[in-house]
Amino acid sequence: MINLIGWLFGASVYVAMLGVVLSLSTASALQKWITFIVALGWGALIIAVGTLGGFAPGAAGPVPGPGLALVGLMALLFGGWFLVPQFRAALLSVPLPALVALNVGRIGGIMFIVLAANGRLSAPFAPSAGWGDVITGVAAIPLALMARRDLARVATPLALWNAFGILDLVVAVSLGMLSAPGTPFRVFTDEPGTTAMGQLPWVMIPSILVPIYLLIHLTIATKLRSIRRPAAAAATTA
Image (cartoon, rainbow, N blue to C red; front, side):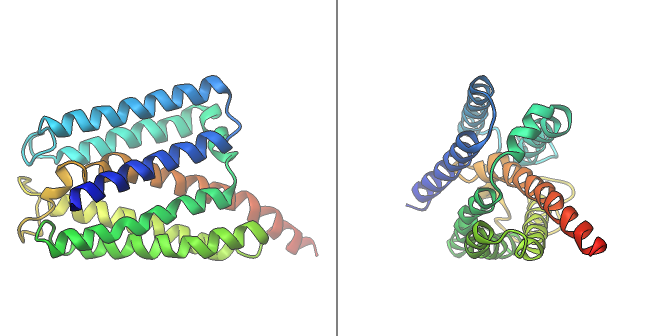
């Protein structure tokens, strides 16, 4: 039952991310189709590797397989951001309230707590990642609504929330790597560690959702900077 919920959660959040970005961005139809095909292909690759046990402890050597997938997708996404102006412009064209609202899906981080209660994840990873995501997701609801009404007024709270959301993901990834079984750099040795994060459907979180959320946070930070810069200039000249 828990795994079924995980499948529904992972798939629905991924589809929501793609749907919002592709429908609201100013990218051309061709660019949207290319993005959709690449996203579909990456998802299929992760599921195929997971089904074959490619993310099991030790399957990729001393480095956890989910970590390699995370780095691979981050390289693809952030490489596109910095090297392909059209990709960056398409993301920046998505309205800020919509980007913030996508983080509501992180309320599903409560599943980390559920997995820990069922003996499938250990501390400190599970509570840190779980409650950090829940806080980020819950706070995204009022912030997204306020951003629709008065973006300038909510810019500072949004910046603080955005920094917290990034920190939550960085800490979660770090704790996950340091808790992964079969690695020489494991620090947190309570069993079962993060074994579940190398199994389907949970491996979709580090290998798909986390890199995309990090890119969304970067996009939000860039848009906030462009909003706050004119406001600061106006305050200086007033």
